[in-house]
Image (tube, rainbow, N blue to C red; front, side):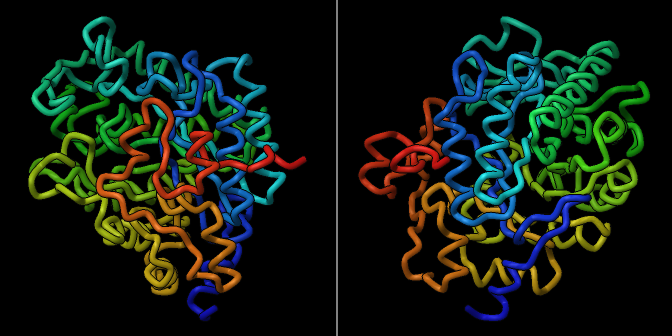
Length: 387
């Protein structure tokens, strides 16, 4: 193993916690929850298997802070004591294999589901601005009220408290991809004239209030981070310059790590952005910009399965850590194999488009799993989760 690769296996401080290495499982929606929003045993095993594969931190897919903030039909919800058993099982299973366990929290906002019934209930956005939900389907979300803003902040706080109560190590607050918090950042979707709109300070107010509220409501040992939209990738949208300006302010508010996430679901469909998610290291420029703007760790993600690229990203100071999604979905043992100098045995993900993305709504699968995993419909432990 080269000295550069060895860098990936150095400990990574995240707030008061320390991950055993700089590798993380990136948030990736897999659809293994239950229709009524609970964490399933299958989902627990999915995350535990990645922890056993050697990552230092497991970040879950986005869990909704409320039913109204849910996007996908099998997406977990974290809103009440009834969700504690699943959260506790998840924390215990990941910890058993030596990794930190963190939940990504989201309010899906204008992307709230089910999309088949979009007009059946309120879909919250900073302003009522029509957008293309799906190719050829334009919809009009509802402008969130002041009371609903206060309720949203309270929902994030409640969810974070439940995560801490369950023994999880921290939360990753989702403010990217066009979901509710990132919508407030966007000059295109935030046309408000109150204190939550207008200039930079107004548009960043909500995400900062959420971070401060979560930080104040949880213990100092509980880690709080932000999945930050780094660039909307459209003329007149939120820019990397604004994201770099916001990064140190979020650190002042209590954020202890950041992700840099370019684009939204909508802007990914622009001709100039097609294929972005398949470009190796597509977020590294934004990641480096945030790293230069703040002293807290910035974790790089986005097509970083090439270990040499991942190692250079850290050694060159562009990021403090590396998060892998599809690479760990197809081969949970990627970290262990790299540390043991078994690179040749790593299963890769050559799919375009990947089957995992095509099957998220019903339970993500992969054509490159071992036969027994394909038969089961998920890649966990062959004999269940070891005790």
